[in-house]
Image (tube, rainbow, N blue to C red; front, side, top):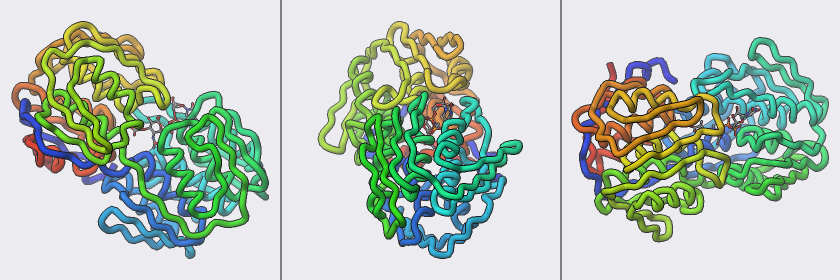
Length: 423
Ligand code: EPZ
């Protein structure tokens, strides 16, 4: 995060009803892959619906370091990489954002050389990149790793069958990057199916790549000689949409969330309906009203189209308001329950064991001073503060600003009372 973000906090007055509509922005987890993907072509690229979030700002600075010519206005990015130099990505930037690993696949795929450090784990888990590295090696790259700094070279990249033990989102996208200009066919077996994968594949195909099956468990890529101009619309952010839907289920009065893709959040919609929520989907608009007498439901996060790990934390705040005992099991990361003690500090009754939490509701929450330990824990604290009695102060809020575009304005415009304070 930016050094000047480190002292940001939110002051939230709880219990305010929300009505009106919120527009969902472009998906963070697409944008952070689409931007490095432009390195693969000398052509010009246009990327529309790019969210105005700090992760995007950091990536644009990294692209600038490489010599990319970029304009960013009204959420439209134009990128001209004809003068891109393949210089090492500095540790200062690479360590700021997990998705910097996409520069590995893009630089290796385009220049057959990449040199950069890659951030180790973060608070939610160790987050290794062994699947990415093993795949690059299998395709012909020679990789030297020295204390988190990677040097990669390949005389040429050869299309291969790549099987993933786990359908990793990042590794699936990174192998697509390494494969689009490789010699021959690459097949990714047990590929991730998250909607962001198909968004990236459609962008690469608009440049002239030949990717088939993105969104399914098997993706085939026929390498081509070079790529041309590209364009793409970033898909709506399903995690931002889900977070607002959870807030609407607790505080909404005719609360509308627009620019959503229902299919991308079916898992959440299904669970909210099981809990008794009153919501209506009409095309790309969801209307939701707060519901009394919510019922306990069980959540188990898994890969798409299952319940997304990134919605587990905000959803656990929702479960504190459901009558009875809900269970919340995180199966993707080792350490994604760090928000639980802060929820209990506000009056929740949650017992956490390893990666499972038993949540007894309904417990009224009271405003307290709490901390955002990571991006989606920040979302959990925001939801808690909005339903709590009194004032909640959420520290370390720079995490939240990484992934939720203009979240304070969007919520205050529909009735919330949130102040973003620089210390
Ligand atoms: C992407 O991370 C998202 N980040 C994550 O969102 C999201 O939680 C995750 O996919 C799962 O959907 C971005 O897209 C920038 P994975 P990624 O590779 O690609 C293990 C958010 O809040 N693994 O699918 O890193 C890994 O440790 C963030 O927006 C390996 O063991 O996720 C994890 O347990 C958080 N070796 C599991 O797989 C590897 O080489 C899922 O990782 C790669 C991953």
